[in-house]
Each structure stands twice: as C-alpha cells, then as structure tokens.
Amino acid sequence: MNVLVFLGSCRASSPPNPPRLGERVARHLVGEASTSFDVQLIDPLSLPIEPVFRPVFTRPAAEVPPAMAELHARIRAADAYVMVSPEYNHSPSPALTDLLNAFPSSAFAFKPSLIATYSSGQWGGTRAAVGLRTFLSELGCLPVSAMLHYPHADRVFDAEGRPAAGEDAARWSSYAARGLSQLAWWAQAAAAQRKAVDPFAASPPFRRRPTERDAPAG
Ligand SMILES: Cc1cc2nc3c(=O)[nH]c(=O)nc-3n(C[C@H](O)[C@H](O)[C@H](O)COP(=O)(O)O)c2cc1C
Image 1 (cartoon, rainbow, N blue to C red):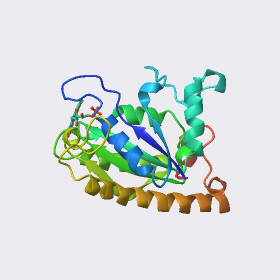
Image 2: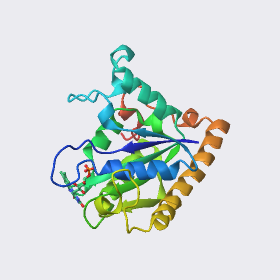
Image 3: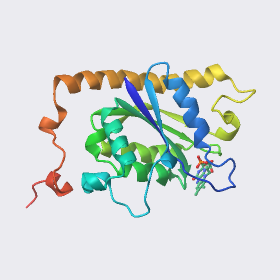
Image 4: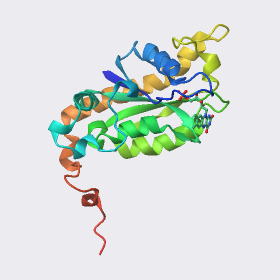
C-alpha cells in the first residue's frame, strides 16, 4: 500500500512561531506511517500553484504544469491519504484545500483518508478536522473514524518531527498507530474491492458538469 501525506501549510509569517509548524507534524507522521506504508510527502511549496485558480481537470493536458500532472498521477496511483492541516480560523488550511481542489475527485475516490490536525493552541485543530471530514467525504476519499489532533505541536515535536525532550515518544507513536492502522485496513480492503469491481462503472465521474448528478426534479 502506498500513502501520500499532504502537508497543509505554506506559511512564512511570524508570529505565531514557528512558521510551518506543519513540517514537524508531517515529518512525524511520515516516520510513523513508514512502518506499514510506502510513504510520499506532498509539499505545496514544491508545486507551481498559481494565484489564478485553474484546476488541472479543466485545462488541456499541454497547459498543465508538469509537476501538477505528475502529482495527479501520484494521487491516482495512491492507495490512501494522510491530510495534515493546521487550524486557521477554525477551518482547514487554504493551502491544503486549494491544492486538493486542483484535482478531480475521481483521482481520490474509493480510497480512505486519515485526518491529522494541529495547532499551537490547546485544541489541536479539532474544529478544522470537523470541516475537513466533510471536505474529504465530498472528494470521495472517506476519512477513517480515528482522527489525530496535535495541540501545542510546537512544544510536542522538534524541528525533525521527533517528540521533544520530556514527551512520551511511545505514547505519541501508539496514538498515531490507531489512525494509521485503520487507514491501512481500509486501504487494503478498498484496493481489493477496486480490483474486483470497477467502482466507476456504476458511479461514473461527471463528464462535463456537476449538474449531471442532480436529482431529476421537475
Ligand atoms: C491565519 C491564522 C489563523 C489561525 N487560526 C487558529 C485557530 O482558529 N485555532 C488555533 O488553534 N490556532 C490558530 N492559528 C494558530 C496556528 O495553530 C499556528 O499558527 C500554527 O503554527 C499554524 O500552522 P503552520 O505554521 O504549519 O501554518 C492561526 C494561525 C493563523 C496564521
């Protein structure tokens, strides 16, 4: 099984400190996930995200930046996703949602996801997580029931994503393992079922307009 870990921040501002706290959380989860998955980290800072929004699926192939075309292929090839988001104004980060919006839901669909949120405050991004559950459900990569929340992530992890001195590293590891084990279980189940039955045969992606899915109301 292979998993993409999306790092949901491209913040360079300060304060709050440190900027891109998400690097620590994402690095921690890359390490934890690598015991049961082949893991790739997806960093929005390494991608040519343009200020004018033109989703990959609305552009002729020749006009899609190669790095975005390559990420599209990696999303399609992945078995599961870990979405790492800070909480901005009680919502998932725009860096994450903007990146995900660029790709068609059919690339993510019929695979599981794991929500991991963090903040420098005491709630660990729980309110962002609730919104992200709805977002990912619409994208078709259904979130597993366990969610990971990291309050005071600036104190919990060092710059490399290791639990800081004084933290109980084994407990943080088993905390992540609950969500990651659910993700691995669903990823294997979904992969086997995708192989047995083409999910798009009965539930095709819309061809031109989302209204193709509308209820046949008079
Ligand atoms: C625009 C903005 C809004 C924020 N809103 C919240 C919030 O609603 N709840 C919270 O706990 N922290 C909030 N924070 C603090 C973040 O948890 C903290 O800055 C964290 O480091 C952000 O992650 P990042 O550095 O990876 O971008 C906010 C920070 C910013 C920049």
